[in-house]
Length: 315
Image 1 (spheres, rainbow, N blue to C red):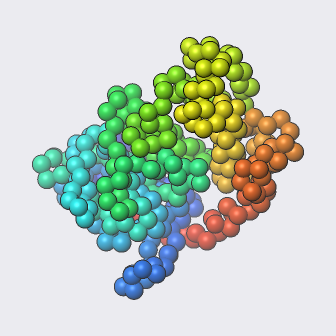
Image 2: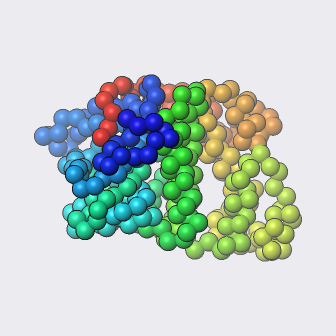
């Protein structure tokens, strides 16, 4: 196990964790009588350099999602239809119970990657809709230099934070993973921002950068180089909602994350996502989720209670 600031040694595997950070559980498989149980990890991260002396093959995968991002070198991912080549800036996403077959490419000297086992938050599902390669396997190659840097840095920050001992370390690490997924969505050809007008994307980035900020449509339109009416029409045509509706949607999604991952009060969370009134926050939350904030938190805690400690994953 290397320190957070140490250089990686050849073929080394770093797994950042603190007590209860990785919480595997046994998951029964109803589809394969030969498979009694699957390892499932609530949240785990790692960074690895493979120099050809190790590979991973799990026929039935794991009970969680696994994301692997290539930093340098070249990797390979096998699947039923053939094999993927993993170049720097590419990532692969395995769904639960999907065969995991990967390692350094036969023509490469090494493969450096950063990875995470995780269970997606409810509002991540559209972010995980990457181009499909095979059943349970998705792949995305990033080409824009800034996007690649953003994704790489976010995932490395995720890995660093997961080693922290602060009370909020896991929450911060999950936030960094979400940031990486959001940046991937910028280049995802089948993602939620595919083919979105760059002026609308500029408005989106401004809105989500500070959810507590009051969005004035005139000021937002000027920032995007559009008239008020043109921005509203374009935003609604491409996203199916107004800028204010979009802001509320993201406020509620952020609140769901905070309710699931922190012990803050409902009033505190409401203020953090831009609702000055706890009553109004609860009203809008229930309108969008069909649950009160307290009921939603209780349901998420029950899900967590089903995950118990166990051994750490080997990537």
